Image 1: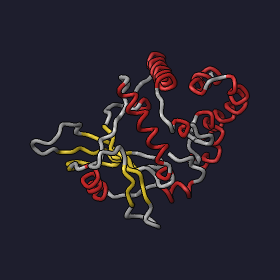
Image 2: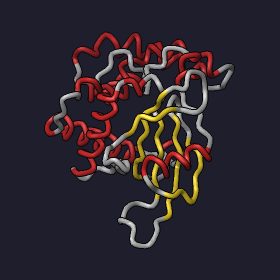
Image 3: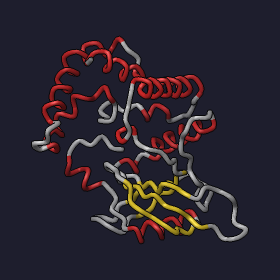
Length: 236
């Protein structure tokens, strides 16, 4: 995902393939026939949940995937996307619930493809990742035990990556102004407009201000993986 510096840039770089184009892409790049497809929510990439049908005698594999079409900005950083994908493969091998890529017909984990829509015929990095069924935390009744399990999983994941994962481009994963980095909560000020007069706007503004006043001054005292725990402690 890109840094998301402004709404116009997001619109300009986000893919906009139709379901028909996505279906043809899966066939052409990955050699799989799509029997069912639906769009998935996304920010600046484009995602599709696809189900494939296999002919008799075809190699075994998953039946459901996520076709991930990376925005044109991040698609210019293949080392970053490869490091992300290799990290996912590593986590899966370590027993974590992580998606893994289905190889292209050429045996690669991703492919740079031309987009048929939008100005300038932009290029997008495409991956076909195994689909992980489940229910988002936002849609279930939560309790302290669930939050504990989430924190425990996050800590185990961080420990495995920091101690065992090695890749020549791993430093590309650490992006200073990346808005999805919890340390960059203050950057969300520029997106408050998206809430309009939503009933949660005041709460969001309060959280951002508390983060600036209570968390930012102490960030240097914590490792990056501890930011989530730090926020829970400081804002409650």
